[in-house]
Image (cartoon, rainbow, N blue to C red; front, side, top):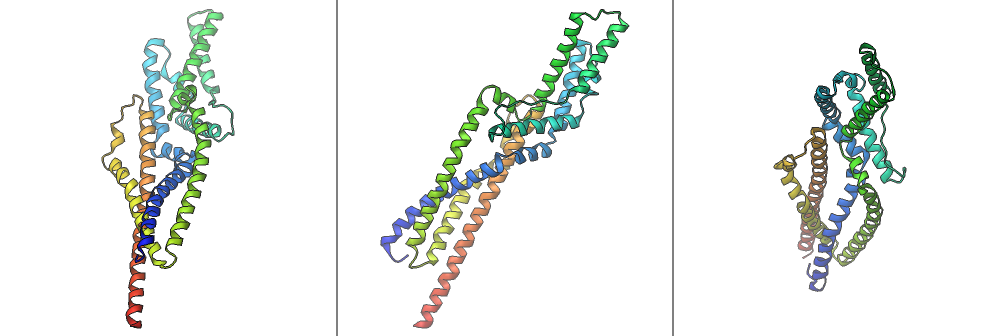
Length: 296
């Protein structure tokens, strides 16, 4: 760092590299770790969303039985916790199929054969026991009960609310944004590469200095992102969110904690890499000084 003429360009390039590296790393984490089917599947398993969704469904049908006269078991015997899990995973896979242009619309369905059979049998039995005529009104009541139950089950299984997002047109906007986001990522890669090459050229006469500047880049970038992430995790910040449905609350807070932990871990590693670069710079400086002393 003896050439003052190159000192300031190195500072500027390092400053740029810090933000470019941060942006590149964040975009990679979002693209390949956060916005993936695997991430949402992991949260589903970690948070036991199928169990929470089924519990919410039990509570709903039990409370509804008082007003409709239809026992909760009519529905719950036909829909299992495993069915709810498959419904949750289906809602996730359909959303990502749409976001990745594999499907042109978002639509989730579940196998309601057993449910339709169970509800129909209940109404038929009720009609026979009470000598109720099976007319058009009767058939409409059966279909209405089935449709209402199916809609509630699909709503409960949509723990990450992709259905609501799609209904408001936001999923289409996210898909358009992701197309632009990929182009931004390409730009970030190119800019990061160009700045890194320029920094290498500035350090060509004293290559050990490159480790110094890379070390500073890694440490500052790591602290810049990992510090607020660790604060959020330490204070359990997301638990303060208020969401009425337990399965949606678990899905939202679980996902936010998941990506926060993911990002903090990645940038802690970046900071540690920066420390390693500084140690390498220190070692190389000592070796160079020893060689100069020996030569004298």
